[in-house]
Image (cartoon, rainbow, N blue to C red; front, side, top):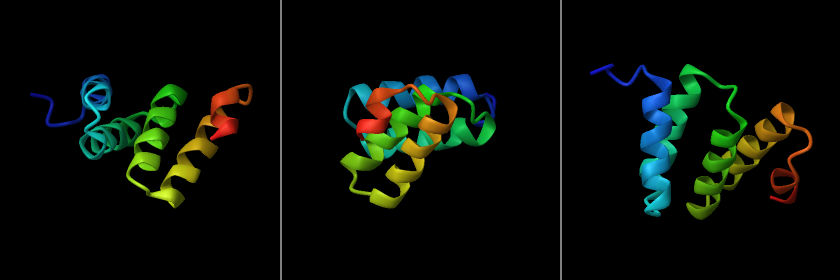
Length: 80
């Protein structure tokens, strides 16, 4: 309905795919959500995890760096 312009819907869709280990579909939905609103550090983290599972190392590094820039105390992001 929103023609993929509603960030919350894309985040929910990405989470749905992530829980089902469809990492390529989850990463696509998370990227769309973050292109609309990029301040959700949890979504950056999930995107980084998807990218790690897909072996997209450079993109994964970027995503975890974004998590740390938004939430410097996130130990899991630092570990990844």
